[in-house]
Amino acid sequence: MSKPHEVDESALQDLLRSTGNDSAFVSELIDTYLTDSRELLVTMRQAIRDGNTEQLRKAAHTLKSSSASLGAGAVARLCLEVEQQARAGALAAGAEFLASIEAAQAAAEHELNALRLALP
Amino acid sequence: MHEPARHNVLFDEQQPLRGRRVLVVDDNPTNRRLVVQYARVWGLSTRDTGSPKQALEWIREGQPFDVAIVDSSMPEMDGAALAAAIRAYRDTNTLPLVMFSPLGRREPGAERIDFAGYLSKPLKPSHLLDVLMNVLTGTPVRPRTSTAARQAVHGKLAERLPLRILLAEDNAVNQKLALRLLAQLGYQADVAANGLEAIAALERQRYDVLLMDVQMPELDGLDATRRICERWPLAERPRIVAMTANAMQGDREVCLEAGMDDYISKPIHTAELVAALSRSLVA
Image 1 (tube, each protein chain N blue to C red):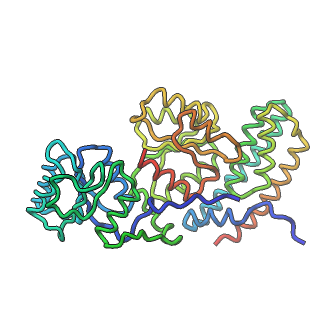
Image 2 (image 1 turned 90 degrees about the vertical axis):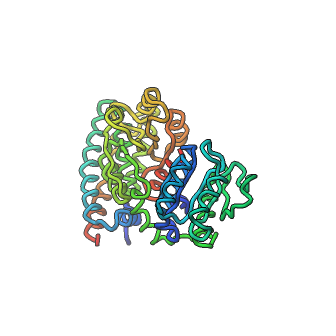
Image 3 (image 1 turned 30 degrees about the horizontal axis):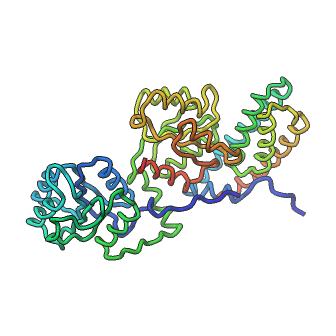
């Protein structure tokens, strides 16, 4: 039985096509995404600890946006929830919710690395 | 998941028109620019002037044109008189003429002239395309381009539609992606990482289009837009295109209220980007 996919492979295919099959560029974009997303998760965890909803909202927004560009749908959806809650001034998501984002991001990272190997 | 942007054939290069030469004579700079810009997007080469005398001079010199579009009413010489003067040098087979008039039909005094087509004001781009197709190829039916052909023509968008573009985006992933998609279309965009940097860039030079992320540090896209609109009049500021995630309802309205001219959703897709850049034509 296969796990549900975290990354929408067709989004990566679209990226490849729209860059004229520049797989080196797509691979580099994945690198940028992975580095940034790890940093953003740290920022989000810190923001929750500090009770800083504005910082949480911004970091969640950025991670949502980059994740959507790379087809990491689950991470994008979870971040959207955090962003909306933080927009309303709530920190309800809390550390537990963040753990689910971290898990989704780790799964996306694994899949992106696998998909990268399959790039033409 | 993501609805592909509707494809508009008016923003494509039109193979049968490619490289054909059009002369545009109209004293109204806005109308002239509109005709010229569309013609270039479709792949025609253009020469334009507000002066009928200048146009006649070019024709006398023997400059090659495949079609001429003449405005019906110009202070120096009206369209019918210009057309008659052109006929002294070039006949209907060597230079078909198109009359551009408020009603899009034969004007009094122009009965003797065999116009190949008529354009009405305000100009409808689809009508212009039909008339050019009809006059230059004899087929008024617009060909639809295949997906593959579309990809190919996008590569030349910057050649047909040269624009100075400023990208204001702080998110590294989306910044890289947007720059790469623009490069694919032939555009070398400048980058600002926030609203303040965008304003500083506008102080240094003029841009035709500002692709603006809504959420940025220091100064967000909405506040930056308000400041830009306060500072520069419409004619002197770039067309501002918001880039924002479509998940947030009401974002579009907020962007337009702040003074942005257009809106594309993130993640950015080439077709939507092309459509937004092409819309800067009619702005």
